[in-house]
Length: 356
Image (cartoon, rainbow, N blue to C red; front, side, top):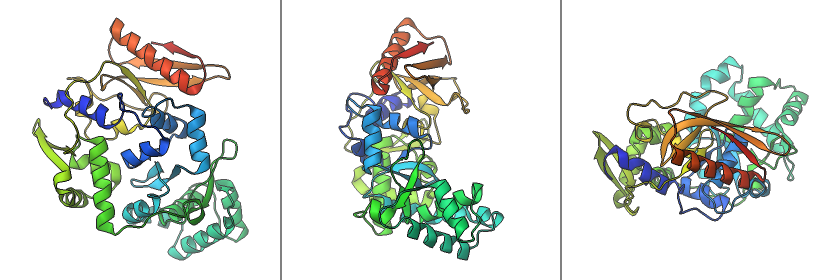
């Protein structure tokens, strides 16, 4: 790579955001390790960006069928994960989540006995392949004398997730449901901790590299010591390079890519492409990473560099994509953006009106 300027090109390739796209939604998650899915509709688009010929219906079907699952894991926040990975990933990252939640448990008067009993009630309610929404789980807990609403219910359910008891079921209309993990992912693997750590580190730096130790710490919720141990266990599989005084890691087998292909990408909120503690390499010199808020937190990347934000507004028969560039775009860049909007329209199956 040629300094910081070479990092966007290498990352575009490793993230599968250029021509080397994958064939199935589960293959995207297997490659990336996990995909943040806090904003569900946008997270499906994050998968589609890395797929050939993806449509929203196809992504929804993969979720409904259980080929991909959605659960609290790592930092924690919602992530798409694979059924075969969910148990070892929860076992690896869950203890730190549980410890981080301890203060909130106390504030919500959720002692260990209450949490354990709540989990037992939830698991029993989901037995036999049942799928229940969060309000339905809350009503079930209330029926057993356990107050469960608002944040209290959220933390009860999250605790059951990070303990590997429940995960996502298919949606009921627009509502999400929960299922027994043992029934939804009966073939989920368990791994010794060192093996799980080495695997997660290898997947991250292979798919997200070049990246720094602190980037993985932020992404995974694990410690710097864990990260260094995982790098050491991966031996020759991962290599490092010092760029602008910082140490970056990537897969030894990855081809060196120094020039980003021309093109614009409408990145969804929280896309894995921006999932770094240090985002210096993907902004233009002298430009700050865009501040995010509830309306404009999706990013526009041109040749792998963030040049603005965008948001969508859906109507019944079309979508509006409004953009907010950080600087004036050239005529060529506007053409790239129009092509990106066309791809988004194909995914949605709706005409898209682009406002630049």
